[in-house]
Image (cartoon, rainbow, N blue to C red; front, side, top):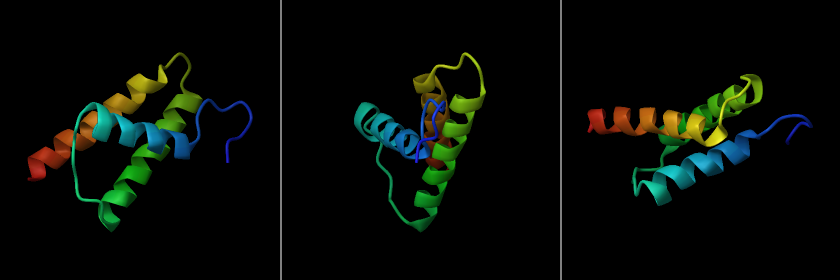
Amino acid sequence: MKIPGNRISREEALSFLLTHMVVEKAYSFELNQSTLFTLTTMATEAENRINTEEGVIPHEVIEEIAAGFMTADDEDS
């Protein structure tokens, strides 16, 4: 649930993360329990940063977090 005064919820951050990675970057990955946990953690990090850091641009925060995931995942392959 979105708390008044917050710019983004975790659910919205997760939606934007997935849209950025899958639609905009055409990135594919296996969705399993581990990946789902990682994505949820990333969404929580994005939510916290966007809602607590002054002057941040939401899509830039989300793109930065997604880039870290995609780079780390590519290195594991």
